[in-house]
Length: 238
Image 1 (cartoon, rainbow, N blue to C red):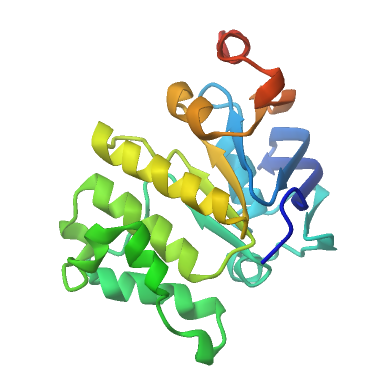
Image 2 (image 1 turned 45 degrees about the horizontal axis):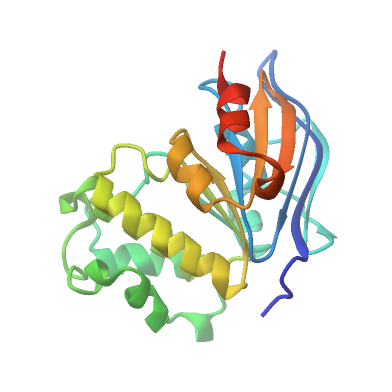
């Protein structure tokens, strides 16, 4: 177990381009163990691009990423996962023809063979998955797929958990369950959690720290204790 309050993720001066278009400009982001850090901003400001860069899905053009004080070479998603970065993408990307159990087992890819087991806490965190292990991923509801996507990421035993819009298209009761699960993970003190979220009510309820991005640059970074919801909404206003 890691020590609470230790900076686990340190993104420094990260820039990213798609072809000739620059999307991120010198973004700096930190996330600590035992905290949820929310990355906020309007559509198209670069939030998803930031998570893709940190998770090794898109090459960065400048800057660095450190996990637990060690530089990470983000040459692929596999190398990022091996370094302790788990990514739950927008849209979930569940394998529709695989069963729930088989979807979970894909998380074994970055683990040594003796670690190829599904921890009991996965089904404690998401009980619905225990009852649906033989059901195909494509047959699940959106909320169930989101829980499966988070559970699959947790199989990799991450140091940093990245989530992109986990409440998108999800019914309110499942949003509550996902929020409760993320708070449980936060309170266990095993990882740092980074949340990209458009649902400001949800994000403000569970997050401990906020980074607001505007046009590919960091507009504000603040702890929740120093940042009321009205200030957040003002920062998000166009």
